[in-house]
Image 1 (cartoon, rainbow, N blue to C red):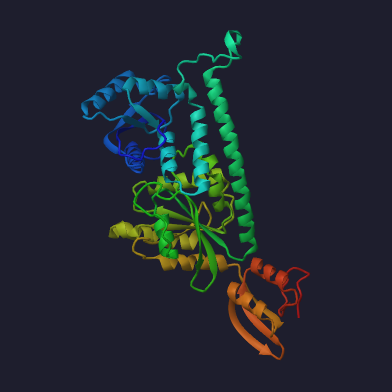
Image 2 (cartoon, rainbow, N blue to C red; image 1 turned 180 degrees about the vertical axis):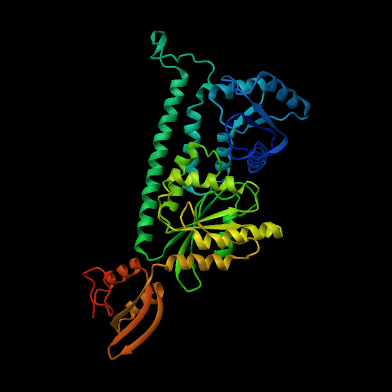
Length: 457
């Protein structure tokens, strides 16, 4: 399998349409997505086609007639394409047999996505994750590389034993590398766990942007935070997680996280290898699902995102608030926009704001339309459980006053002698943090919902 496809290479893309599989997306859409994946690593796709597969062949997946047809298609081009992309999983035997039949390199969907991730990952963590996924994929395909399974000589001179097979030696070497990479990734996970623990101690809630690849998450992230995360009309433009602090209209500070885009049939190697990155979603206080509402497969993409979230542990039983940001409304005609607005009104009236029934809001990350409404919705969702408290602190306690101003919504302040009464709206989490740091403060109003040991005036 090629390790780096940085230079343009001619390729053809074949989508096997497995009859009776019942995919939610049409074969034409799946083929178009596969072509987009190829374009993501600068491949020159000179031909694309859908291959109907009534009965998958164990040796080649495709039937003999279709294999001959594709070989003839390859021969028609000058120069002849050196790569065939099969938009689906291939077994090691199928992989090897197709390469022999076509005299060309073959990448299945898993290998193609691995190539994209390998080309795009920038951080040390991202590269570790890609390397691990590559090695685990290669380990199952050593049979492709070693058609001669002769044994190495063991011992010294002519009297050595038969030794071990070459494939066994290679597999052991790969296993050693995999163990080392997993150890390094475990160190990364521990570091990220410590970072998340620090964020939990801080009062700033985390808002995670999730969505199908190329739905516009990074464009929205850049517009909101004025960051410069790579944002292109390309699948998997963002692979490494990015986090920025953001002040909402009221001054409430949150941490916004941009995550890797999801995709249908995400290779299991990548779900496991990138779990450390996607764990940011598991720690978020609010999940914002960014959808490309102008895409003709938007509903199927939504289902794919929910399926991946469920693999990560975010399922229908999850109680965290979910907002569905219907992006790219600037690409809709008047009738479709009206339909989207009807769906938004219905969600505001009836939906619970969960992963199964999210509250919807329309926007265009490209033009900025609706972005302020999204920020207000995030703020209202975060502060829905906030309570108003009258807190008494020493007038000279500048640290406590500054803490409240930075982390709570201050309604009023009244100074009386050496005491200062601050009326503020804040969450239960923030309130607990404040009284832990400033135990001499007092709550002026009785509230049965407060802990019994909370000091009161």
